[in-house]
Image (cartoon, rainbow, N blue to C red):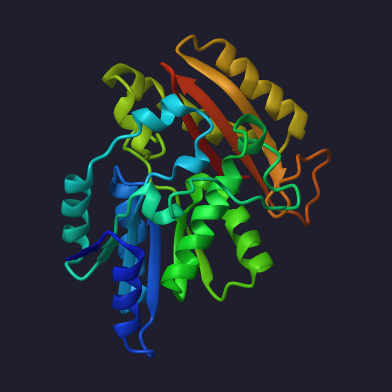
Length: 280
């Protein structure tokens, strides 16, 4: 497995590949788990060469403490990737290398996709996401890039980024991978106690129940029902629950049978922030 630390090394390697080869990119922040592995497996099955970036991007953290606590598990990450394929190319740079010693995010206009849900609670988060994703897509120049639907809002913003910046790449969203109890897989899950990790399964079971109710009840009824469920669960603190149009991420006011909707949720479990979503 090839591991590159600098943009020049990676660029030189990519330049050496045949122009006829399909190239896939899987951007990650490391602390890899089965969910990441599923993205990489799909990329490997659809491309001749796959680049996996492992980089904890400082500009998308609005909370410095959260950034400091983010796990650094490069050796374990490389082991996981080697079990998928020894032919994977890994890009694991420093922040100074990525940002040329000037660590700051670009400013984007994502046409309102970034102002709701995560954007409403995490200042400048999506400017940071856009900055690193644009940098990686520009450097690697992949045919396809793979992102998990657990971060569905991020996925839609990346699609908007690619459209606005005219980047010739196919953005592929991949289904959420869950633990046996239904909890969406996340690197943050490792920070939960065994007891809280089990209790956090309540998040997905509540989303599933909300989906059923959405078939017969109004959006406001479902939202209030979810809020009441969490009021009765002392170990989990609900930050937000939203039901939005899939394309615009605008909150639903009145259901339209011609539109697709999704429910989004953010919950604190013992100080660890967890997000999830479900198609309705």
